[in-house]
Amino acid sequence: MDPLIELLQNNSRRTPAEMARLVGISEAEVNARVAAAEADGTILGYSAVVDRLKAGHRGVTALIEVRITPERDGGFDRLARRISKFDQVRECFLMSGGYDLAVIVEGKDLLDVANFVAEKLSTLGGVLSTATRFQLKAYKQGGFLVNAEGDEERLPVSP
Amino acid sequence: MDYDSKLSTIIRDLPRSGIRDFFELVIGRSDVISLGVGEPDKPTPWPIREAAIRSLEKGMTSYTSNLGLESLRVAISEYVTKHFRITYDPKTEILVTVGVSEALDIAFRAVLNPGDEVIYHEPCYVSYSPSIKMAHGVPVVVQTREENEFALMAADVEKAITPRTKVIAMNFPTNPTGGIMPHEELEKIAALAVKHDLLVFTDEIYSELLYDGRQHKSIVEFPGMRERTVLLHGFSKAFAMTGWRLGYACAPAPLREAMMKIHQYCMLCAPIMSQVAGLEALKMGETAYEDMRQSYEQRRNLIVSRLNGMGLHCFNPGGAFYVFPDIRSTGLTSKEFAIQLLQRKSVAVVPGSAFSGAGEGFVRCCYATAPELIAKAMDLMEEFVNEVRK
Image 1 (tube, each protein chain N blue to C red):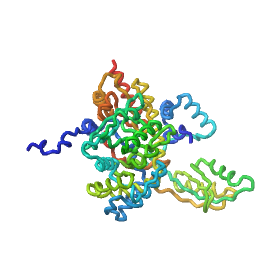
Image 2: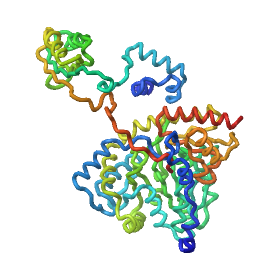
Image 3: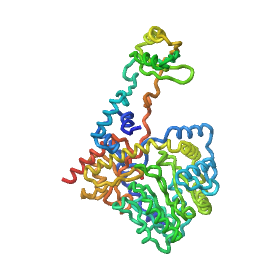
Image 4: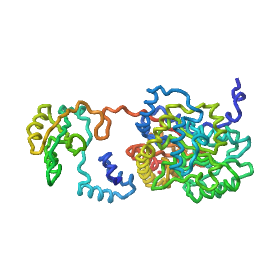
């Protein structure tokens, strides 16, 4: 992977000047390459990874396993894209194994998610079945440990 | 009691490590950004820690063979074959030690008679000269210079060879300079060792941490070298396992056997949980350190560019995780520079003089630290340098 993209993926708040020094290229080149990656959709967006409980969020998150019928010409793509367009859907992946789509859905409470599944998801043509699993507690998200204990300190000077 | 008269004269006359003195100044201060460490900033990769935890759960708390676990020696043999293109027999040519420090100590003790000379290079890690003296040998210093990016020049080595020379000890990439060896110099030094029938101890502890697409080459790979080389390596730097104290020596059977005799009486064996962890580290191989290596390379780019930008000349080191900028333009000695920088800006670097006289005029900055902290430390150092120059 482009080391610039990797840097941004680990910490999108780095300044162009800092990235330029880390990778050993000019700041102008950093700006150009990031702009190109944004334009061609390599970079989909920027966001902060938030411990939602700490942030006061009281909503619910569910993983919904969805089985769908592939279509003659589009396979799973057309239906998967339709499902992804709902605002409640945070993530959507085609999976190998016992079901087809893993759909991560957020709602303000259980009923909200239940309504989305019953009224929106299950009623789509091509959706064969759904199994909804609610998230109880987060331990790691987006590559970050939640409520991580700090690492032990190193000696400030060592040989 | 006159304790001085009770002490061994060798130990009494041994200086304390300059690092130790500096450590006393820094310890207890919580506000310091430290570029003074000699180890990775991340803890040991989790799968390695997890393997050690599992071994404790299983009750693996006993001694091992003096040589180390056979499974670990087999894994070391495979790893060394892959990385150094030289194969050692796990049964007769490999010894698991308590870090490279122990391996170096017992290697000197195994071969030196009183008065035998050991050629080594400075600036270097703090233990070389003391280890040679503690083995009743005579340290013979060859200085490496910034104009050669702190590589060891074969011509300088040749001048230092006498009829009493027994060993050439080397460590590249080097702590504290980050210097590496050009292959042609390595080849010439190998030829000197063969010509004068010398042993070579090569401390390879930073050999995985090379940048700019370089491939490591060890002196042991050159013709005639395997029979006269003791290859010393460990897990501390690449696998971020400094506190586990685990290393190894690979050497022809008679040398390994001599080292083993000392090891069995003074150490017995390396701690078993560390050995189990080391085995897991070798199973992971470069997946355990490649990400870290890449991030070190970026941090090196950052710190070298900042140091040169503030007018402290700093060559671009090819390995390890240290830079060794020249601070003479500030008019300060390296100790004054480090102490004043600590007192005025709360940034800790290590004076080059802690790594021998040859390090005077330089300071060692370790860049195994988060880029944000490096950037902050460089801002503060730049302020300091500008204030001093006024």
